[in-house]
Amino acid sequence: MSLCWDRFLKEGDVLFDWMICNYKHMIDGDKIKHFHIRYGTYGVMDSEEEVKLLYGNQIEKALVPWIKNEYESGRLFKKTNWKPFRDQYLLTRMYFGYKYSFNFKNYYLQLALDLACGICEYCKKGEPRIHFELALYGWKEPEKENIQPDDVVPIPQDNIIPEWYWDMN
Image (tube, rainbow, N blue to C red):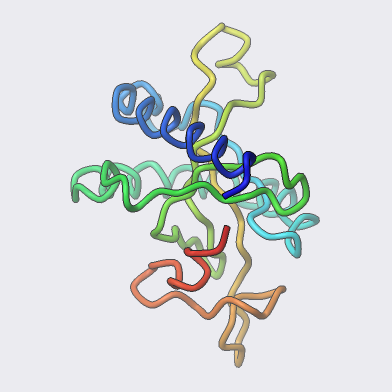
């Protein structure tokens, strides 16, 4: 393993442990502190801002009960459901991604843990910066079997990220 990957594994442990200890403080009513949508694959880099502008509030409203359901099911705190994902643009950065996809309309997003933006209302108040975010993987289009625009990852069965994609470093 590379030094970078070893660092990602250690950072992932810190993020996961933080979530376990601070889960109830990461959500503020029906809002997620430091809510952010990032790109999950290189192909959607130009789309995440558009998705956030069009649907950000609706996505966040649907995401909070989904996260709470994942928590109540016991899956959210299961370590094997989380792993580092290398940022495809900045290969020396990572986010800690969840194995189950969150779907909104025709969009596929992955719950993730990362450091906060540093500029939102919560950061300005000096609150802890580790937060939930979503990584946009793409969207479903009629007549297509794979998530678009990359056309590589099949539409997940049971909202589970496909094993071959999950196992990539």
